[in-house]
Length: 434
Image (cartoon, rainbow, N blue to C red; front, side, top):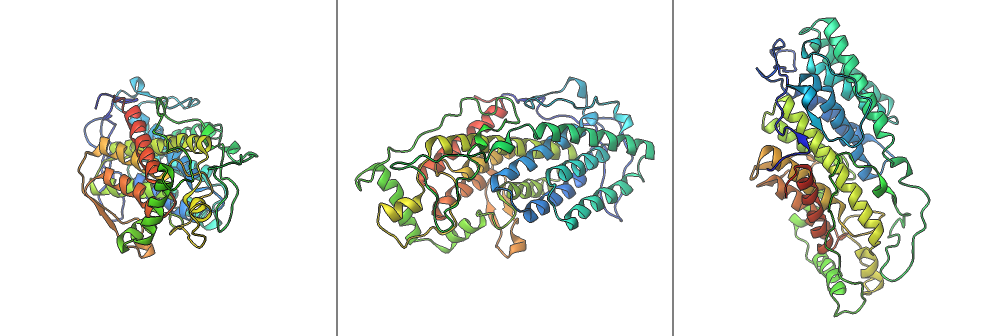
């Protein structure tokens, strides 16, 4: 590791021990660097965010990357008073202004800062949540507050909450100017040979054609992110393009039970959305590593930001290339009119694979923070009755997510490879690696 756009890399945070639960011990605040808080407050808000993503309607799948990313920024910045030497810490958020000045760590109970920030940012980012889910946000915030009041004075808790809320408000105001509101502006789809067009069965209009214009979160994350292109479009059976599509068709005829399970596991919708799946993975890893709140917040913030930024670049490439989806080519060019993909085809151009890029980016951040060759079992979809899936490393998770799109019948291998290439480059940029 050569460096990081976040300096220093493994940040030493103001620390205390906090364990949430009626029968567990709560330690009093101690000076910075002497001990660590548990990540329980973050864990509970990650569970809430997963719930809100799962229940939300009318939001495009990739758009949940914003909810993940901005909540991570709010959590990180709300914890700033607990950072050792926080005034000298440089964080490369792209254009974030209006943050409150952090006071002395003694004026705050850091988990209360995080609690208030995550309650506020989730209320703001999910304005359409049901009354039940809105009540659940309020209930969680208040339950945590009552616990914190047993460990610090009401004055300190109030100060912490005011700071956390102010941070979250600044982050949300920043988020509102990132361009997402224009992502679905009127768009005229070009026509021509090899150009993407709406796919069956819904034949939906192009989804978020201007998502690629959104502002990135981490300065420099998309530097030098050109990727390998696809073969030149052709309908000639001897052409490289035809053979590339035929590889998708041939795979669909011999899907194993495990390949089908893989495709369904990474379909994510219905489920918790693709960004939500990675919130779940990060949450599980934090628990399995017994990571303290400092490391947990860093992982949450960086993973979400990387995922958000790589999707912006992915959508730029999609609507520049406008590549035809397999289902269209297989039906109209290859002549297999009854063929359909194993999972539904998203309503945007094929090249490149979103899931490959976002999953490899997220996995790459986790490897930088927690190490390579880390065994992991993903239980995200236990609640849906799906068998958990086990991996020898975090990158293996990302690579499987990518190849699952071949088995799902919605992406070509070169598109998956290009997504992998993009995801790895974004991680290199974030960690300032050559």
